[in-house]
Image (cartoon, rainbow, N blue to C red; front, top):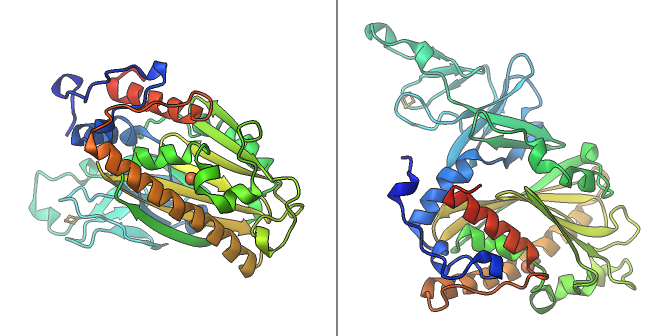
Length: 373
Ligand code: FES
Ligand SMILES: [Fe+2]
């Protein structure tokens, strides 16, 4: 259901974001904010949805979600990449499940059958319904696009090009030492956290906490403010962490392996909920999505890709390193959520330098929800 600006009241900002204040704590548990985010951010956002290799051949598809919107990505008979809302036009059963290759997409509920072009080909007993015109019941289109091994989707069929979101990030990733044409998918890891999605993303957007909370990371990456570089762009941000001088290849520093392909860590955020991570060492790149499951609950997954000659042992090291950092972050954001939920501190205070990217993110959230952006 659409929510008009006049019909909702957002929890107020007592202090402006421009003065360094955070979004109000109530924005991290409010169902009004959550509903508005789905409508005004996610219903028109590009998000990573899955692997391009799953839809390399005509007739192949995979099902996914952009936030709350079920989508199915299809390689059509002519080789074109297409995306649809994965909701049956009959009564709403999800049409496709998982991934595979087939000539049509058939809804498992009453067997309405759609072509790879989204058109409704067959609806059992439709000949008994003289008013029914199948041409009116094609799957609804969404926008889809690829970059390297990744497929992105946007529920808005008229979305601005994905390239606007990738602008700046693409160049940096492609110069990172990871050849996106030579990476292979190796792992998917799902996660779930009892926190608002913004709380989780904001934790990703600063390394002010790294020296305190990530001893393993801080041992190999120089997380001091003069060495740790951050960049903001209209629709993305990047963080760069140099390997500490003196770090040499060895078990104690795993997976950091200087001189093995990637020389510095990179952490990119694509508005609103996709992140891309590259650790220094053997060619690796992980891509994550952060999904707003409920006002106080997030889910997501990370897909890990590696250079084709990276060994299983090296992959384990990188995934374990990343999962350890993720575990440390999860306990931080759960504690933050408890504090936010208490409402006892209605607005926090950001540091303009060390938390610059959070300020950028929060201003964009605020603009999107208030209709200013
Ligand atoms: S809901 Fe899909 S065929 Fe009935
Ligand atoms: Fe962290």
